[in-house]
Image (cartoon, rainbow, N blue to C red):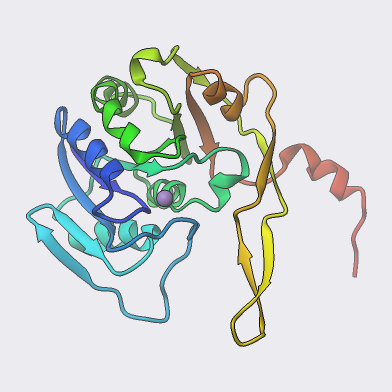
Length: 249
Ligand code: MN
C-alpha cells in the first residue's frame, strides 16, 4: 500500500513527521507538502505563477504552493504510481465546525477525494504542537482501522480531531457532525506608523454552539472526533422549498 502524506503547516512541521512515522509502520509512504506554512489557505489553487517541487529526499517533495497544489502535483506529476490513500496533517491546531471550510489540511484531503483517492485529515486540537508527538503510537493503531476499510465511502473524507490531552487519557473515538463556531470581534482595526488604517483578521474570541454529537463537544470531553465530510454542499432538504419560490425570468 502506498500512502501520500501532506499538510498545510509545511514539510518541516512536527505534526507531519508524527503522521509519516505512524503511516510507515503499516505502509509505504511518500510526502508532498508545502515548502512553508499555508494554514487557512482553504482550497486555493495556484494558477498565476509557476509551481516548483523540490526533492528533499527519495520520497519527499516540498512544493512552492498550497496544500491543494501539492495533491494535484503529486497525483499528476511527482509520484511514480497512484497512492492508495492520502493522509493530511497532523495539523497544528483544531479543524472543527466551520473551520473545515478555511482549513488547508482539510482541503488537501478534499482534493484527494475529488481526484478519487480516499483521504483522512487529522488535526490536533491543542495550542502546543509538542503534544502531537505523544499521539504517534495511537495513530499507529487508529490509522490502519481507517485506511483498511474495504467500503471506505466515496466522495467523502474523514476529518479527525485529537483532544489536547495525553493520549493515555483519551476516552475513546466518537463519530460526530460539525459544531457551529462564531468568531467574536475577530477583525482588529489599528493605525500603522504612517497614520494609515490597517486591519488584522483573527485573534478575537470564539464562541461555539456545540451540542452532544458534534466534533467540538467530543473533543472538549476528551474524545477523538471523527466526522465524515461529504463533497456535496447541496442542501437537499431545501430543494423543494426553494423550488416553490418559483424563480423566473
Ligand atoms: Mn495548519
